Length: 204
Length: 403
Image (cartoon, rainbow over all chains, first blue to last red; front, side, top):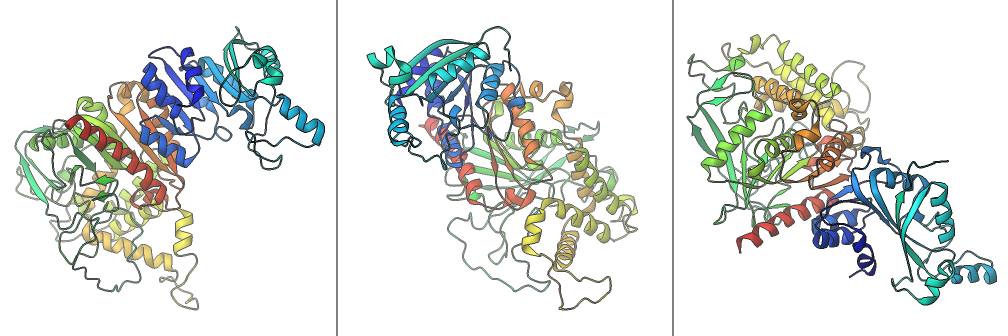
């Protein structure tokens, strides 16, 4: 089982409506369908991934998050809108965040932490953009065009008047540690945020 | 007869005879049309009543013990019951959707019992304008009532009754066929497990209707049309039907596919500076139009285009497709093709969005294919993969509930 599934599942209520932005091969939705009997929909662009969703019996809709906007869906049409490991790869993560909380009552976001000590060390000592096992791309070919740190993300949430309900910080194996809990922006490789709109959003 | 395909056998008007003595392994092989007569009157949406009618159909594969593996194929504008296999050992071409129906194909006849019929108003065996009107003793001609997609679904449900099929594992169709699949899901929600809508739309756009109107005008303005009573005059509005088909055919292809096949190729090396056929594409269109006009009935063409125009299931629900879909209980597969400008991907997306709003199960893929609307008949790899995956899932469900 993918480790993040167990971390996300408790935040999803039974028999609710879930939208997964960039749902991949549908693993998360298939899991939530089974565990929480959700009515789930996934948006995906990868051909193989879409086919795999169809095979699994996951509702998948071909949709390019960069090219197509989400106005096709109505306000608060979903209970939860999830985006795992895609925020850093889209053209306008800030607008997508707005959309998530427009479409859903709550949002769940996971992304890699660029503030992790290994990234900082790489840049500090090598003077070059970090390349690692978990972020194995070079600056010119990376799909991760909007990498950020936890602090960056949280600042954006504050600016948008988005309330962070929960935050789980982990390493890439989805395990947590004392160090990560104490200094997340330095020692956690990834975070899973549960967010809601704090009243009216103040978009800048 | 192929519905809209860019005829792969087309070389020149004189074609080589291709004799096929044995069939490919993935073919359903020799098939024989069957026919059923219905005596129970069918009240049509237009207000008229068909007292009696006949439906011609074909079946492929075997119905299982619990009658749970039946798949209904709904045809498009110029299709008919002959969807797969061959009628004669030396037939040059198989049924119109042979690419998708057969052993190991997306609609796997080793697992499904497939029913494909000629719709009412058609011209290939089922009761239509070229049949005898019992009231007059003459052929119906223009007096054949206009039937709608809803009427077809009603007649198909009676065929299902007659075949002892309580619920279709899936109702599947492309283009106008997809509209029937949608209508099935709304009119008989308990009798459809899955609806597969390929290159279809929830309703025609003004541009679509305009193309249909030009096609109709081409037919009705042919002097040989005689207001639809051309049978009485032992003639056929060949020119009008040919022109209608030529216009239609262009809209089923794409600029890309026509460019690839014909480009600006000419018949002869130098221009003749006249108005005869100069370009290959002209030759092709003339050939297609002529062939079609020899095999298809003009009154049926008029009727089918009208059925297309009228289709709009949301209209009964204040224009809300979402409200219309609230009645559906089945799961949907919706597929569109990138270069289809007759029923563009945007049309399919409207459907999908309404399905999501109505909280229906739906999978949607837009296939990147160069063939325009015709793409639904052409077995491109990604299309076949998605279609197969979905049908495979249905077959698994059926087989699981059987055991």
